[in-house]
Image (cartoon, rainbow, N blue to C red; front, side, top):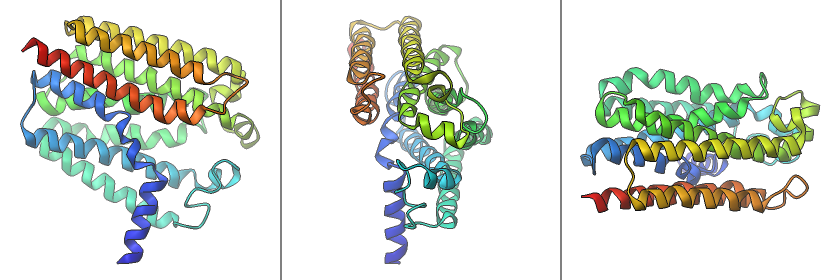
Length: 288
């Protein structure tokens, strides 16, 4: 039993479980808007469980699918599977367990969330193979995270409102943009391994331009989202705060200096998600 618990702990460290924070605040934002306040505790609980289980399944599957690629990349060779700390069989079993928890959560929410769950899983797990096929794989990751607010809306309402798609689009371009930046550190490896990415295809300088465009698009969509949901001052301050944080994120790194990439990727994006959620929550509270 102790050995199994140690493997589970190692798996959670491998998939950086704490980074579930990236998409969760956007899902909670949609949840509050859909419920026009705080929904029943049962709904909140199962939305959080579904979000964490979905992200856990996606990341564990990604590590399972990329084990051989990770072993050949000096940056990722120390990950748990190539380092021999975990077996692919165990990680696949862990993935299936997370999928089961996700399906249970969708069933506890409503019928539509359960019916749509296979589509969500296809997107989440299919992303792991996109880098083998297209330079635009970053948008696949973006869609995987972008589904969060739409899924949370469906979880509360049992139907989809087209207005929430503006937030889905914003999260999609936000996540795709930071994935482009993160991929810059693997540019040379991707070329030698025959993998596709924007940095590998257009160079690091071109990738930075693409990431900036994606983040401008994300900010524009956030503004449209605010207009659709009639944001008050606090909500608009949240949009402006996201813009300022995105600008700061791009100032942390440059095509010639990727040393602070982890800070830009892991720290700043978690802050962006939480700050936006906090301002929208305040906006809703002030309107009541």
